[in-house]
Image (cartoon, rainbow, N blue to C red; front, side):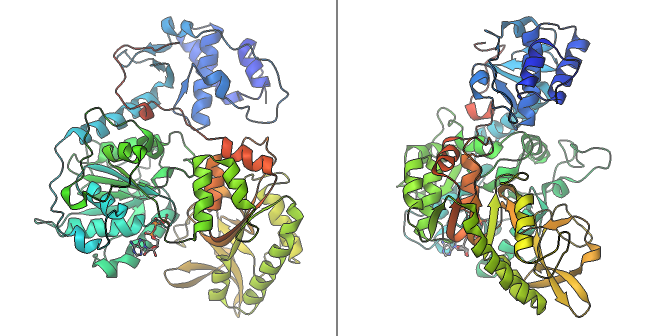
Length: 590
Ligand SMILES: Nc1ncnc2c1ncn2[C@@H]1O[C@H](COP(=O)(O)OP(=O)(O)OP(=O)(O)O)[C@@H](O)[C@H]1O
């Protein structure tokens, strides 16, 4: 939609599919309130708003002209990008440099922020740097050898040693690399320290991830003797909802969280705003352990703090800080691994969950090696590249028939097991390559009338449902029972049956978007790629999709689409990733 009131550059950029009405509206409002008329400033303001909408907390002015991608299919037009952005330097709406008094926009080191995000980024930077500079927390690491009995080098032992010896640490790695295994043993180590028992909080950004974290920690509890009262919650719940605010919580700098250790799982999904709220609510003496996989899709809201922390340069003079008990465990680390270690980051590398085929494919996607990805997909067995979507139909039809037969017999346990066998993942929600069209198509293939919810229909929960204890992203299946159709969901070790009438936010889930599949695992995954031109095709999307599978991956699309996805990496602009504290008064090279 083209905003009616805009003209000049704002109108041109809106017509080119780069700005939407909301971007232009905010820019015009700023201009009116601040008495600014110059087109380049208005455009920069609208691009800053657009940046947040697209997930970046700021706009890098030197590269923005080359890095923005139109939001939708728009006719290609030659755009008159401003030759420089110097008008920003004396604009009444722009604060220039880190220390300038408040104005709605802030320009620091060539990055233009909406001031709110600048403040949040500064808070995160300050909290992290202060924690890194303080003397390390005391930790007796003698127990490491028993908890991790393997030979060196052992990255899990290294990660636990680093996390025990720092106020903030990051345990990263792909699916099944033992992040939870490591954290469970770290907690045991901390519980064994002399003195009062540490108060531990486990949290995750979504209800589904919190439920999964709780389950995995409890699975490990017996093996390492963890207290069974450890519960995981969402970050929102941990910080305490406030009815009067969506972004402020009961726990904050004036009312800190009463914990000695806070573990946050799936931290790749934590936005900048949420990380700022969490850090300010932590006592200076709380150990924070961030767990996640920074190569997966980033949060819906702006910021990608986990990825920033993993890619941040190490502070100058920072030592590796590896305690003697894990001295040989980092022996195989490359240059990047050693830099990460100095930042308290350890990446686990060996997946215990899937074979070398999928692990190799995931690594090639992660490394951006499209030739290797295509070579691996020529394997033809566990890894397949299939250009024709129609080829999916047979696999889907037989899977749906098996599910329906189990559901008609009322065998909820088998249905839930079958649900984990195979899933179609799409990049798009709508259109011929989207989840909606494929859900309809698969419904028809399995003989269901439109709108009918027959036994065997897989379901996706689309909003947290506290009454039924179902979380946004949970999946279940419709099962026939003597009392009528019920939705079966996996709860603990067995199925839980919920009448369909009690469910408010569910939709059919033969196919899922890759975003929705984050945090789930299937034996076989089919990934339907749109044509190479789709802006949704990114490396993070492909990596997230292929790592959902434990046994086989079938990519449906062209080699060009695979190359486009591997080649397009989402880098969200952020000052945090650059590391050092910005120079005083510095506007940078604009
Ligand atoms: N060192 C190890 N020795 C034996 N088993 C291990 C080891 N590390 C991990 N495992 C096993 O491998 C499986 C995957 O580990 P875990 O769940 O900790 O991985 P994860 O990285 O947390 O996975 P996800 O990304 O899915 O959360 C688990 O069954 C775990 O018990």
